[in-house]
Length: 145
Image 1 (cartoon, rainbow, N blue to C red):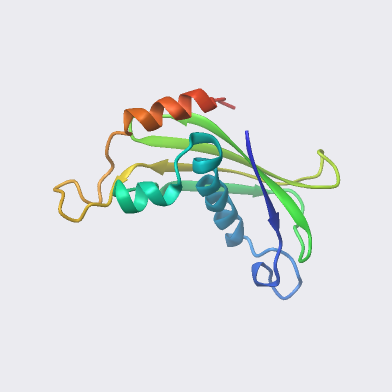
Image 2: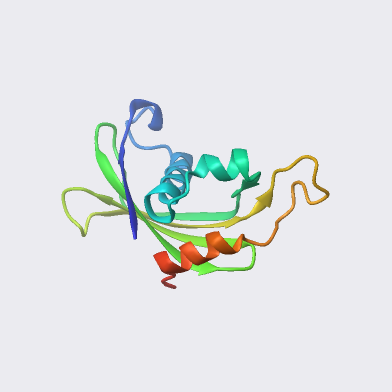
């Protein structure tokens, strides 16, 4: 599991001081980006800039259990649920720091490996995951729900 602490900022919240629901999808993506260097040994930017590969979400969902509020710090916990030819399915759980049972939200995102090389005939299309990346993800672990 990869864990990212997230401090809830004023800009994350609606006028009531509760995290505005689309921000959770950004928290999911931030967690995925930090997972690359933390567990796979690759900076996320290396894939985008040097290898011309992106990982856009093609499906994402969330269920909300309790609100997250301005000034709190929460943990976003990420697991790999499935690994396809050109896709990675991530599972997320957001917890308060005070108690492991303090579940705030859960979610799932399916990201595809996309060719970002504008000179390539495959530009903008899903492509097979590089074998080196697949091997590192498998070593991290795939834990279906």
